[in-house]
Image (cartoon, rainbow, N blue to C red; front, side, top):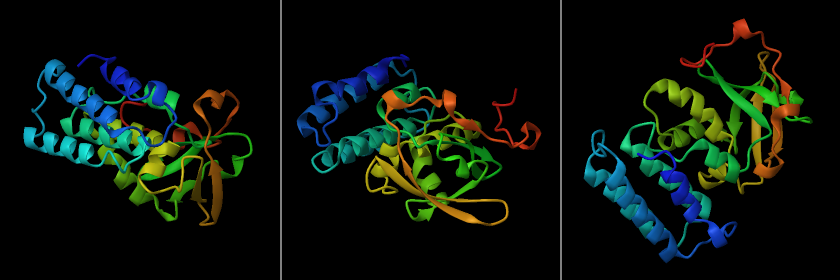
Length: 232
């Protein structure tokens, strides 16, 4: 599939509608129809990992829900459809998400089966090195379980790298019910001594995100469990 295709499709879903929470369903339906046409045209083996009926049913469910879902939820559900295809190349590119979605002021990474904070924006240093245990008042396992079906992948290692990033998007958390809106998220981080700290994390708009000044983790590199494919 063309590298730029999905970026162009989602950009088309914005345009002069960008920033509005409720789009005109007919415009969305046109975009989604085009998406399926382009998938059929350019994907070399679209139904290798999934049945055609499953993909079409997911598309029909999305179209039927356009009138009541907000923009962020629609984009999340488009990603769910693309993940059904079952390969890492058919996806909304993360650089598109980075340029359109708000981000938590912390960077998460897997250490074994735990999500730890490896970097934090100034003012959020207290979360460094701690384990994310709750988000939006729910166990972090619930958030991971909700996000994983949205993330296209070729293998488990890609999930280990991408899931922490997706959990950091305010719009994704809001669409999945882990935040009341995309502007702030309630989270609990737990230290190795068992002490839990609650945070109200304001998300950062893409045009204000600059991680160059973030404080990095003090964990020794040798103590980190690095996902396969990320080791240097």
